[in-house]
Length: 231
Image 1 (spheres, rainbow, N blue to C red):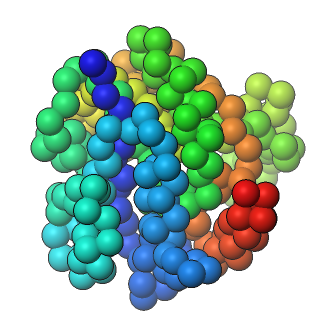
Image 2: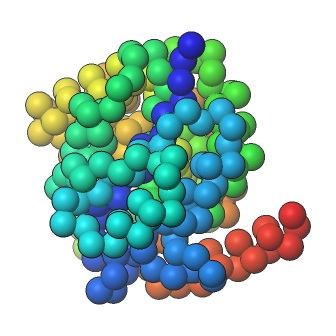
């Protein structure tokens, strides 16, 4: 039976957030950013295992090990996201046809219902897909000097999110080939696309934001408060 295995890269320093504390460990309401992320996946019954991949010298992760006995923590973070995910794939026990869902630790507003929708939508797919939201702003392409050179048709443009869900064997092969080709891919879909594969979109909304800058934390707080009211 195929399994749905979650990998959460948690090895980033969050330099763009300009905080001493990595953004995934920052307080958010009565929890932390990572708490909200983990608890979203723990609510999805189709998930077989969750792996959090951090740096070996991560001093924050011990508290989470005590709180989450069903989550596995791997101290094998790499220099890049792709390296961190590849390290995890090398370690975990998975079959080639198992599904791997890679999710940003700082994407704490992911809705469990969207995770479930993704699993159901892609369970019969050969390749996999990603959560993504339709672009709503007018998009401009610029040159190195900041001059607009083109307006991009947003009707066929999506903003990539996570989870990104692919078969274990395919994802591992894609990331290794990108590494060997010295390609710096910023998400798993890019690596799979490099193999010439077609990646599906599972539509989400803009609430599934990634905490990258201080203002994102305020937005995440509003989203979670509103969602809790609805529940």
